Image 1 (cartoon, helix red, strand yellow):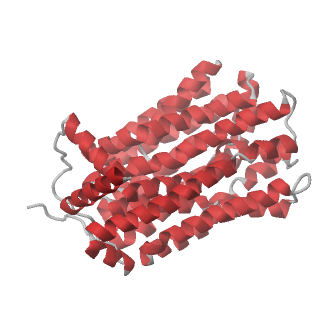
Image 2 (cartoon, one colour; image 1 turned 30 degrees about the vertical axis):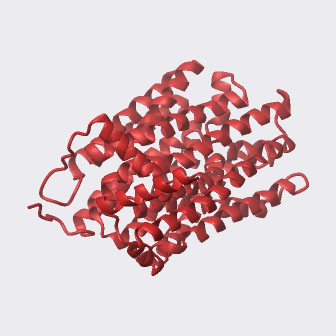
Image 3 (tube, rainbow, N blue to C red; image 1 turned 180 degrees about the horizontal axis):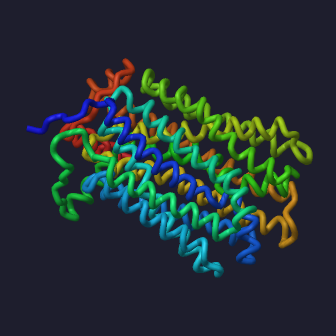
Length: 455
């Protein structure tokens, strides 16, 4: 019989989680390393705005494409092996990016970075699920995202200062070394579970893997999570990963050092949003979608104010925009919380992988389209505030699509759960989360299949 060696939520749990979070923090640093390097990259590789956007688009495309395969690997091999592999890939990618001088080679390096990045986040969430009690998992998940966001701080002002003092190669090579350090920490400090038996996963046939994926995908709660992640996170990610800095500097006339400092604000705002959203999700799981819709409405409202402002917006308005849209990060975590609520532990990796593709697909679409629209509007001339405003209106297309899908799958998820698992549905309405077992989940998935065939 498997015995619990370490108490859930005890000291060892905090040590394992802390190591995983530091690994995620360094990964976020790598992911956002283009945030203040965009102008230097354009000069180094002599490329246009759309070509510059392709660095982040390629990185995020690979990330999104890897999420479902990574979920399958996570269910089989556990967090530790995937985090070690990620550290090696991130070291290789950033080392190569620090040295290459051709545009195609740089794109290849960002693609490898996307693979390494894809392995990390849901592996860290698996650590939370394995080492902490169910009632604390929403708050711990929010804390994971919040503390990982410190990497975004390091990728702004400190990296901008590093570019000034040690140049392109020194900055990216130094960032690469950090992944070697975290890889060693994972090797010696992380254990997949607090139980006495190591993680062993039975080998699954290709047919079994496909059936498992189909069950996760047919679950309306999984799709609700995907569209939640899609709609809440892309605006802030587009701003912080690439276009925020050029928009502020070239469009709004903000000084480069001030613009870099402003990119820290989303992380600081997340220190407030994260705990609030986590506690709300833990206390009122049935009403999580209301905070999702509020996050979307807030971001759309503030962008409307900025885009309609005559000429350049004043600094207080820009600061309020950044702070309000920062709620998208904690809001997107609720999508992953839906995956946990509506799927059993045996499918956690696959379902979370599907959900986690949402925001990154939306972000890469938005980043790419903003670059294309900027080039079309400017005609090759230096971009103006009008060019940026025109390009950034594309966000409303994604907000509209995503909001419609959230409302659609919220209804389906609730209806399916109420019809085929009424006890679990009533518990959820009473703001109690009852984990799905494999047998109930299969029944739940069959219910979705019936609804799908009836449409």
